[in-house]
Image (cartoon, rainbow, N blue to C red; front, side, top):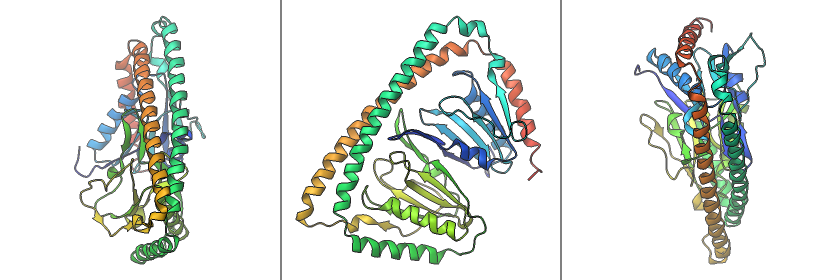
Length: 373
């Protein structure tokens, strides 16, 4: 891999308190030259296929975006090549992707062409059992995540009762004024795209924030537990930046998917990141970035003993949230184990030599877009 090749990692879909939430349409919208959508069952090599394509392109110096699977964090759901405006995506369940402009932009690649139907049919009974068992495990996991979300809301609401709102407004206004004073105004692209930097996986919460920030980027951290208003600050900054004409990358929270966890402004080489447990307890170790003075909203919490009842209730809600999250993760891990078993019924049916030929042809086809932008 060439030194100037940078790989950013993130999730286009995530397991959340609202179920499975995905932004796969954002990948389609951002890659306008060509999008290759792979169709095929589990264990047929879709992730390996994409990883090998990524290795080939990284060795040629291309920056890449890797979109990992929240239910199997060792697997890829998609890769994108920003310079070529090309992506390769897994278009099968649970993130079914269909072409908007078939042939003109998107191209379907059916891996079913390269497997032996008789081998798969011979395992029909076991395949159906695995699929149904996996669905039940995910339903249970999502019910637990929904309960965890309710406990999280209570945690957040109790902390909000302790917030000194006047001090909060003062600190937030000063922080926003300070960072926008440091940024030049007058962008010419007010669009945005949405993904997840972190996700709830079979291994617990995984956070790829450190891969998103490039050399020399200004990083502004916000500290404070749920209820301190950190996400509201990030949303406000994102809206102001967009109003000023800047394109923003908005990364959502896996617990509250409607809320933002990070906003990144590429044209200003700057980002604002929320630092909160359980996603991240500190700023990720990132070499070459400029860590700026942040905003600590914990200073806005009232310490008066009269607020002790709220802090106690918040601690109890946090404990329930953590326990429910841990249980949900265990069910997601069990679902992954079932999925691994399911993959085993497909692997022996696939002609991987032919798929390798397809992969090599695809890389060559992608490289033809080098001069088309």
